[in-house]
Length: 142
Image (tube, rainbow, N blue to C red):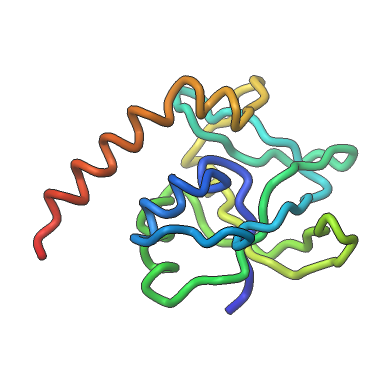
């Protein structure tokens, strides 16, 4: 499968694990950079969107793993506001990798001017998000 580049909440291994339904193995998320974009908070939301910017780059992670079921869970998590788009990212080792990224669908999510930061999101929203995710998972039929 084509690797995925995560630039937002899915960079957090706990969040990714909750979404895909299993623990994320150490080393499964590889640091990578996407050139030509900047990351900002979506208006009226706690999560980010990418905005084209030729002089910028976005730090994120590359995920080369994943089953078809895990990809389906990711698609459901991202919802109709995002669609997969092809990109090329650069790993920390300098390798250029073709990947897919969840980009905001035009007109679905409006970007703000506020930069988005994972550490700030984790400090403010992560605990509540994980509690909600666990409650939703417990409510799923067996």
